[in-house]
Image (cartoon, rainbow, N blue to C red; front, side, top):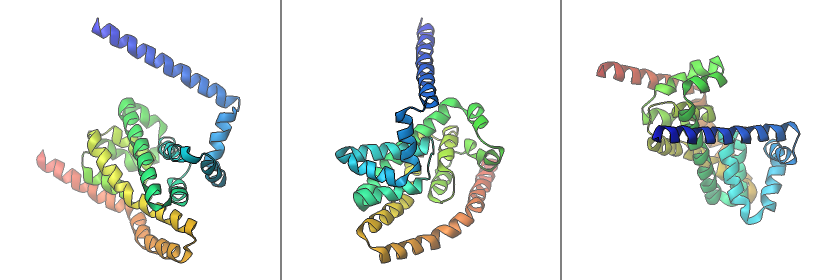
Length: 240
């Protein structure tokens, strides 16, 4: 009876999901105002800025949702919304709101990757991306996850789905991915806050300092991750 009930729950859940998906596709196909509005939010930064200001006290909640969605469906680069958070809410609140939204989106992507599994997710990735990052599905080390989220240039939305297929526990991934994102999130929030305050000299100095650190890391990102991967393989071989 318990097996029958579980199957019934799954059937109902999948049926509702199929209905919602069909309605969403139908609405998009008809060019619904809601879809066009959301599309413009992601394509027009000025419109997003003005819309968030117009929402008043709801703006933080909407901004957190936008940050979460940009991880899950990746419609725009996260750098754009990160700077906007600092511009609208200041350094501290912009950093907090961005971190909350990015963490929620990352956890959702992780859960979806774990729920669907490698066989399904693999179909939606190019061969190039899979060959370069597919080893993540076997990753267990927190250090590897931290470095990937710390270094700029990795497609962190795709990486979140891949880590969902790895043996890594959810709480470990939540901790290290959030910590790895924080330096970059703080920098983007600071850039936005200084732009809003008109502190262009400080903004230029901050941008130059960030570029001096980020460009070498970006250039050598694959070499660094490759070194961590080889180190993991050696340790795994020694244990075997």
